[in-house]
Amino acid sequence: MPAGAWRSVTATRRRLGLTRRARRAKGAKSLVDQAPKDRFAVDLTLYLLARFALVAVITVLLVAFRVPVLVALIIAMVVGFPLGLLLFRSLAARVTAGLAARGERRRAEREKLRAQLRGDVEPDDGPAGDAADGARPTDPADRRGQDEGRS
Image (tube, rainbow, N blue to C red):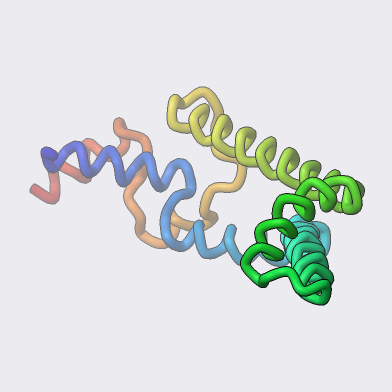
């Protein structure tokens, strides 16, 4: 890649707030903001544990009736997974809603980033103070004088 192309990539990253400093600030903020309201991981874990526990209980019941362990496990999986869909319907609905919300959030973020890369939308929360810290200007017209002086 030519040297001039790297300059434009760097300028675009600064304009969009994709520098390390901006990512760290955004990452810390988003973890604090999303921690109390994001229950998807908890719901998914509970749902998986409940389904595995159901299979384990059915396996233990079948082994108690002198069915071989491997056969009991296979029967428990065949019977337990559909039964889990019925028994844990509300938990499955919460997991599905969490997946849908997470997918929609990712789609919106991806579309916002694509719009920013196209130049259709200005970044909302760019890194504050980059220009004051001695960073190069992001406008190509402003950079021409600096680039010629450094060569």
